[in-house]
Length: 139
Length: 139
Length: 139
Image (cartoon, rainbow over all chains, first blue to last red; front, side, top):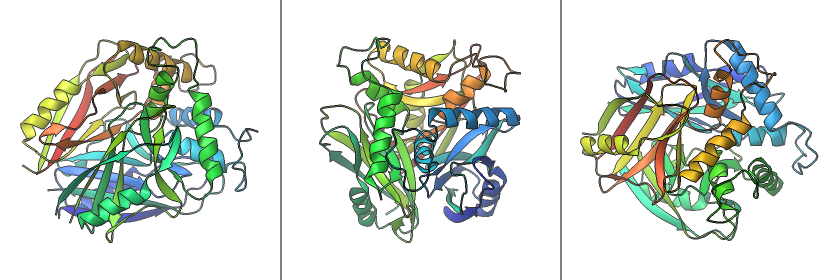
């Protein structure tokens, strides 16, 4: 099948990096594509995507804290504050990570590097359901 | 038609986030694609792309000011200054946002989230014409 | 051929921006695609991709130094330090640039802007071999 599209829903337990590689792998398997690409798209502006190291949790912890320092809560210069103190930093941290990401498929599998995992990067303190579109195409 | 490509030109009124969602939607409509993807590519290194909240202008204002603080004009450490004080910050702000972005198409429409808009992020004070390639493919 | 995929390997001489445009162009030529897209994907979390100005080396120099200030080595708040002082900054600088990038193909050529070059952004002091997948598809 040349095009295979699925809508995935996640409800993160809280802010931070949540690995979604297994769910994406299953979409690729269902697609039956051997050689192609897998595009991920997050339908939000306060949650985003990152491919990061999946071996050592300390790398994710440091990354989350780095983004929290770079775009902190409570900056008095923010004017967009009606939706809570974590809303504007969420938009900024999304801008500084990814809304879409495309990963090649080789031999029927996601061609991730040895240490790469796919993460949903949740930026709100009390996240609702997050929707991600996974589109696989190839031959 | 499996591949549909158009070259769009914009002349932003000034620096900041300029919504281009309607122009991109029209390309998708002209393509006739029902299920597929839409890739956007900006042919510049001093203007970029972002998907951001399209509801409240204060979010865009704060985002523009955040990028201006993160990569400010006039940093004495810049050596690339021949093209003006806004040139090097423009390259940095482009690096920290997106050159390409891919949005899925579902049921013949861009599958944006409820609050997502597509923005051309202009970083120069006196922008010229900005060229964007929109490539739609699918079935 | 609708899908053409190649695995490229680079061994950067050191950290910083290394232009890979000629190697990517050759993949596009070999693909025979006239109208389509070229997706680049780096299989690492301590090296990344950027499209940047290829005219003046001072722009790249300033960009490298900017990222070094933004995510510096030796921050005592890092806890992920087992792989050396340049490892955690490498993950952060990768997060702040790109893992994948998609460039349109028009008239059989990469549709880069006049001043755009494709760069492998190496973040480790003593890089090993870096693997990049180039996937071209179209008609």
